[in-house]
Amino acid sequence: MTAAPRAARDEAADATWVVVPADDEGPVIAKTLPSLAALPCDLWLVDDESSDDTARREHDVGATVLRHAGRFRPN
Image (cartoon, one colour):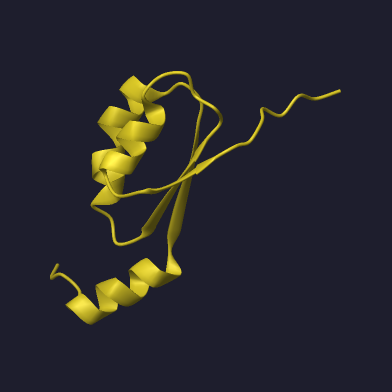
């Protein structure tokens, strides 16, 4: 199998998003994100006010990090 031409990979990255929710997942994120960041996609992480280093680890791999303003509290 041959790799797709660069233009095709860039186009695929524009069309594909990977969205990962995370809450205090620093150690897991550190193991998972490098392989996700290598994919031809836009990588978005939603940090639910983690108290550990989750957001920093997400940012380090070039992901777009979104942080919740407050935790969801079901009724």
